[in-house]
Image (cartoon, rainbow, N blue to C red):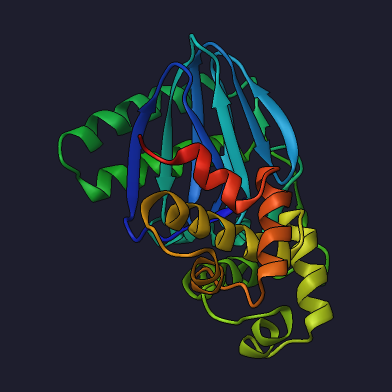
Length: 260
């Protein structure tokens, strides 16, 4: 399952520590991960990378990613709206060949510590912006960029994920979603598979299964009603997709999670 995040804040910085993890997600912000201790495993565009002490990860906007830290890991995550650093927009339409930097200029980490201090003191946007430009300038100088394939449309995938998360309970299909965005269904399917790494229908029905799990454990609704409330159009499809996701039937899932 891949989730989209809709966050309109210009800048967010927070610490990560032992056994921190976050599932696969995508958003419109740039994200910087700095490992200061231990080890972190990051999946970015379906490739796995390992961060060690003083390593960085750069996640450009609309890039699928997830991560897991070890039991002795520490670091920080900085999430930045592109509008805050618009002078770097030309980088955001490209792809980083390798998003991990193992031997970054030490000045980048020094500036990050100073940025965090300013951020914790309730913001001084001009100083924050200055530190961000220095940090990213140093990191980007050590990165190799390449253009996306000509059929790439990063923002399309983000918008489709957002649309599906808001409308999965309706009778939407690949064809109807393509119509909403004014594109060919085959093009949408290929682009989504290229960018996200799994099928659009798989994610759509994943949203539906997750909602069905909520209804199964928090309501007494009959199975047929849960099926249609979750967006499935038949009990057969509901049972098939649920079993594919959870390796058990909806009834078995409910029985396992029924409170005594």
